[in-house]
Image (tube, rainbow, N blue to C red; front, side, top):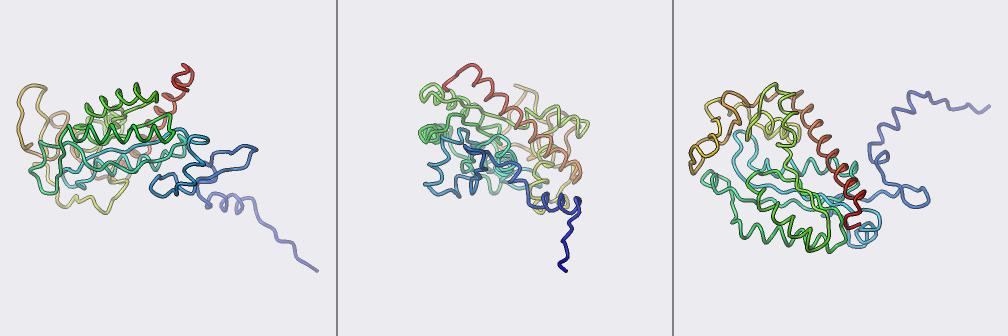
Length: 285
């Protein structure tokens, strides 16, 4: 007599959960069948698959931008690692592909420190303009720049304006640390800083093995000067506090996980809301 195989509901649910998030996040193709890209990263797609996805199925691209500069006791590439990890975490939620990270930015005031690399505003502006213009030419309608470095912002905003108007596409530039200001104050109960509690926590959630609390001491941090008060080149400290006495790194793994999750949720929410408003207004549809 053959025995019936009995699988309990609990075991079945566990097996489904173990299969990973991709199945739950897969976009639906015509006819109801799931169409899962082999990757969300443009670096990993062959040209044939890209042509099948864009713009017929996917109209949004995430563009991480950053810099290579000192960040206290966390990686010099923090401004690249953060938006890159953010893009990977939210790409399925916002149904986007991920462009390769632009790893270099403008950091003249820090380039005296070991490992820093800075490029000119003129060169950066031309590169960004060409990247955004080529992404538009490839069929993307929504170009979302996930910026990790404040020194890039003005040039990114100007390039976004030029390309949006010239190519008739929609461009959003996101400075995540500013967008998440209230989250920083909620999680840490105080303000943040460059390489401070907020940025350190976010990167700790991404590459914990490359965060070095054993190298840290509070003397490495200084408050940023009041606007217009003074300007020092090179900067005197690689940890810049937004407010005096606040923003020192905590190196708390639980805070790092909470902060990473809440920041990414906020950025994804902004992207979806912005695209929905563009669509409702009929902008470049």
